[in-house]
Length: 239
Ligand SMILES: *Cc1c(COP(=O)(O)O)cnc(C)c1O
Image (cartoon, rainbow, N blue to C red; front, side, top):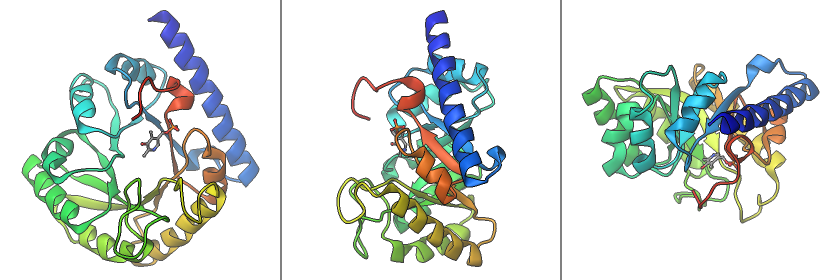
């Protein structure tokens, strides 16, 4: 356990340094960027260590793993972000522990989450997940709505009890015209964010960037980066 703590502390410090350097390079204040540590596939004991080390935002992508982990950590002051593709039969569970759902990509999910949040007497922050590899009316390979669907979803979230529209999220596509062009992806997301904020000024969260590309995300203007591997190590299985 002591070894794991040392390892996580070391990794976290390295990621912190990267974020600070990226902020400095972009002329941004360090406080403008929030680190979310993606703890998927790693145990609750790691979440506990991360909390001791000062982490306050964690993310998970599967309800089956996240629900017991969150339950094992209710004594900790943590914000739980849900970042995975979400089936409507899982929303009741997710609404019981998540503070923010970053993967809103269809109207059915909005109505289901709203009902679940009201029932749980909780307010859920929501990010619209934008897929730059999606054609109009379709979803991206890694989830997300095509850009021309943002407005409709945003209006639905803003008008739904129990939900709060917080902003936008994206995962850089692995295929299509934007593959390998993280900077372009994140800059495009910022343009969509400007459009969104014109109608919903409070929805100013922009979640972008992972272990491999957090610098590009910070340069583009991301407010939240989601970092897994660089803090916890290479995942034992795909997740
Ligand atoms: C796993 C995951 C991350 C973190 O990816 P790393 O490359 O491990 O930093 C970020 N966002 C989402 C949506 C993820 O599923």
